[in-house]
Length: 335
Image (cartoon, rainbow, N blue to C red; front, side, top):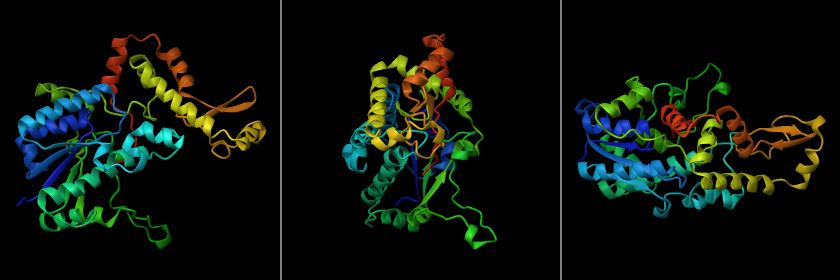
């Protein structure tokens, strides 16, 4: 019988790639963070960069050779809910919406954490025989073997992304923060962040991968990530114009679908403009501006033009170096 379980939540980027290689190459790391059973799981978004897909395939092969279980959680497996099973763009098309910094980041929980824990509950049922319905299989496992450790690849400098699982209390009941963590999560899951504990930033991860002669992958954010800045958008447009156009089309489809008569009337009155009030029909950038007295959303093409003015002089090699060295730009917390 196992004495415990550690699961690496694999994003196929530098940080999680470094964690996997440390598990492979460093006995002290294994003894500290994954001394018992170990499995690697990656949940698909349907919008990974081609380099991320290639790295994932490489790592799947490595894991098979090294006897490390690796699971790629794809929509057809049934762990993604509703339209999310078709991936990011399938959901945007079905709902005439878009990922935007102005709106809640629903993509990360629906494409990453929710499928991950649905899969994990089934894995524990099938691998260890705990038959509890839903997430109760995880609770049953934890009661006998201790909490399942979910290893997250956040590096030093990303401490703000670590969730506060033990919020401080105040002297006033009405001011106490509400703990929304499900009971099964409290009882069955422990999130661990080895890179933060070891004070390793992204540069340290790159140096470690080089030291053990393993691949240093590209950042693993979605191609159509709303948190991409102008230079990342320029890189996307130049490296894969067809996919970038699909993103542009999705944004315009959303803007068109929500440009109803009341919105058109409202935006003709700039003197009544109040930020974040009646003007909600925004694009990826999450902001708008007045043009010829009319308030319009700033689009991906607007951001691309801005990026061309600022970074258009950079060569393909310089942009590639930037992409590799600056990592991902996702701001969501672990879940």
